[in-house]
Image (cartoon, rainbow, N blue to C red):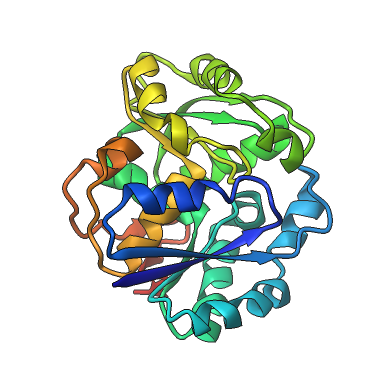
Length: 259
């Protein structure tokens, strides 16, 4: 049995995780521990507060009791808004407390793009424009070329969690460009797991969504390959060790550890 853990802020689209567990191999277990989410607003101060080290550390103990082999901070804005260096320091702190490798959804997006071999991507973000631009900058610091960014201007996680698939498709289509090899939809409050195959057929290319990416990142850290076509192209491609990600400072990271 492979057991991986997720620190998930609040209660929004966490039902994506049991759905993914059903679609994965029966020897994979996904354990979700909710962290406090006092303010679901998509503002920089509120999102950064979600990623406070003390708040994350408080959620690790329950995951440890579950015997997890890796931990992922399942939040985008509460990670990429810290910048590349801050995001890695954040997960290093989680790894030290948990005693297992750790990462975040934001970092997982970079590894997922690398796995697909996508040279250029489009970003379809629920966020306001200023927050979406910070995610684009985070990707750019890792050498991911973003050809277009579409921001929906959603005010908070509760609003994003209520979106139906037609709104998700509309946002993805608005962001897509002919030269984009994949479309990325950040935001772990957005329900997407039940629509991944439909989204990829609609766009005619791979789609990466936050909760899907978080699970793939946790399994990568646990050295557990998984094949699940109903979870999209990301779970169809053959697993291989990802190339080290070179950030703006030139430092490389893998498995939640500096290398």
